[in-house]
Amino acid sequence: MPGSVPPSPAAVDDVAPSPVPVSGPAHLLRVTLLMAGSCLPILGAVLIAPVLPKMQDSFASTPGAKALVPLALTIPALSLALLAPFAGVIVDRLGRKRLLIVATLLYAVFGTAPLWLDSLGAIIASRALVGVTEAAIMTCCTTLIGDYYSGHQRVKYLALQTMCASASATAFFVLGGAVGATGWRMPFWVYAVSLVLAPLMATALPTPAARAATDEAPAETTTRRPFPWRQMAGICALTFFGAMVFYTVPVEMSYLLDDLGVEDTGVIGLATAIASAATVAGAVTFARLKRSPDPMLPAVLALCAAGFGVMFFAGNAPLLVVGAVVNCLGTGMLLPALLTSAMSRLAFEDRGRGTGLWMAAFFGGEFVCPLVLLAVESAIGSLAGAVGVLGLAAALVAAGLLAARRRAGAADPRPLPEQLA
Image 1 (cartoon, one colour):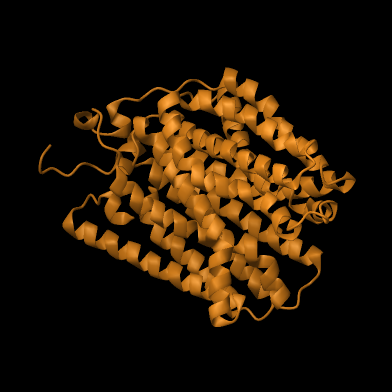
Image 2: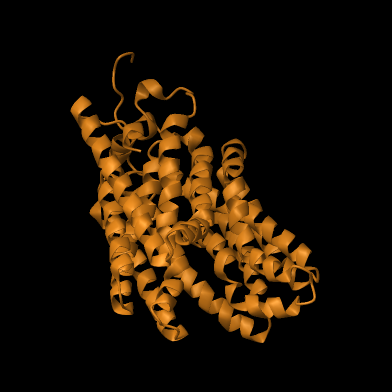
């Protein structure tokens, strides 16, 4: 109604019932498939990391191999970041389930292609196509979680998605190293697992439908409305920054330990595993808090900043690990908080496009994270200093979000999401 202030979508969603059953064997299979699908892009990101040196040796005679071989690892993430918004549009037009099944089948085709490709250029092209399918799979799985569940159930399963992604990264790294011991091509066979998932998705995942007005919006706003660009711009900008915060420890931990004189790969692996476990613990904590995500974001970012601060001042490895654990507890809550906050802004007909934009922001932040830290390190002279600068930036963003919430609260007791992000 003109002149009225609509309730926060997050608040509306918190009281909406879940549109699908949340117990029983069918529910368990559905959740398992959504989590497994969400892990496929993680598999693409880390599985071949342990065999890159062997791959480098195999293509030693290829011009530019030193730069091109690492590109085979990173280009899927770049493709995902660039194409996720388009995947989101297709999701809304063609349907979540249909696109998910097609993309999962193509994931196996492109993922296993390096088994019989002899050209490094062709392998990199196939890896880029893997990123295309990952964009569709990740967008579809996340959108379906938003479609199937609402309120606390949605928060729970988005947090579970973060937990599975964090845990699978470590598992896939170990798997890639073990399988790769027999040859650098062998890990690519693992991509064929999606051939098992696709038929199960086709039979076990229900086709979602738009829900009643009580979930996505008040009754008077259930007619088709413009896409919420302003609201999504704020949360996507915050997600881009949050992705840099999220990936700093996984990407830079080994270098920070090396700067402190720790060169034992076993110690480095243990430290990274401890930090990864803290991320999972943070996601579990977020799911158990049963609170709306927007009010939590300033505190979560402040926790991340505190961890970075400890890492900046750490003069020994144990203290560095403590800082990493504090930071990762925060990032484990940060990712589901950002994603849940984005979902609360989207109606059914917009959810695919909105999820694609969010994915693009997140994976774009992941891609630029090491580049930004490298630039700051070059400017101030140390990687620890660059981490400290990122921690300061996180603290400033947290303070800005808190100030925005206070201003919104002073103006109206029901703050609008765009004022929070």
